[in-house]
Image (tube, rainbow, N blue to C red; front, side):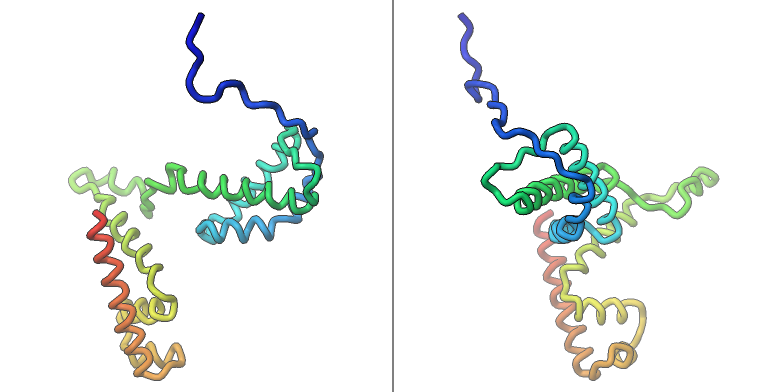
Length: 192
């Protein structure tokens, strides 16, 4: 007689609820909710439409395969929304696990270094610069605007004029922004 395996004592029971059919148009009508969930999960605007498309396609395929089985006592709209939110969370986590999101290094001309064998550009500088720019998003938007404009070489008085601020306010936002950015960089160095 064999020893019972560890973990689940029996296979998962099949759901007693029958599969429910949902038309693709009904799922597509919930795209505003899905877009808000993806935004809350931190999916950038540039990629949000792609992840939204994956959510909708995944939901339609799951319904066709009979994997949508809502509890009969729940309101149908509420059950569908809960189910779609779960799909959106799953797709957002898959978005961050994709290799191209973790390792991609944008190069204007990928074959440019092939012609010059003596000097191959290192991607580490670009990766480090992108990491530092991502840290800039942790600064308040009002302060970040002033920091970016001053970082591009504009004078604080010009920045104040272009943003419609008093010069003193622009200086104080610059000072607070520099302080917050320094704190963020210090935390980053400690975590390494």
